[in-house]
Image 1 (cartoon, rainbow, N blue to C red):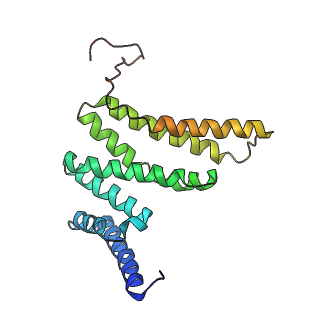
Image 2 (cartoon, rainbow, N blue to C red; image 1 turned 180 degrees about the vertical axis):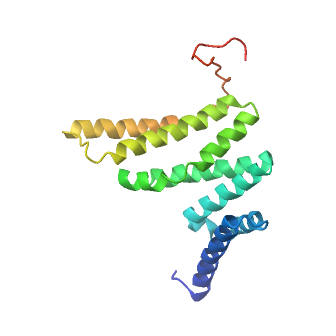
Length: 189
């Protein structure tokens, strides 16, 4: 079960393909969408979470820009799920902060799709998930704020765990929550 020359070639080929897709994306080439889609079909894509995340989020964003919400939505959902899965597997909060800091675009895109489709409950759910991630990352970035004892550290770990559980709750079956611009409950929505 070692790395064979064929496997190494496959890995290197996929990495090169990812670089090509990124370049085409930056150049706004018309073939960038197909490049990302082909990359998602690579047999080793699941091994490279960062490349898969980039391909899912960019392909989803391109489809969203073309008003193809039906194609964009599952790509963005998978990108977010992959991001949250990878982030939760990181041991250090400093690693988590750096990992997620540049990866919030799929949240923005999927929230926009759900708002356009009047699925405000689902949009709110994704907004809360993004906000939860940002808050945990902000707290982790404050390296000068150290708990004074183990009990506080345990409480902070429990809060972070509870936030992860809350962020994973599926609210798609709930009715939309409607409020006016001043925060008061609105009538029928």
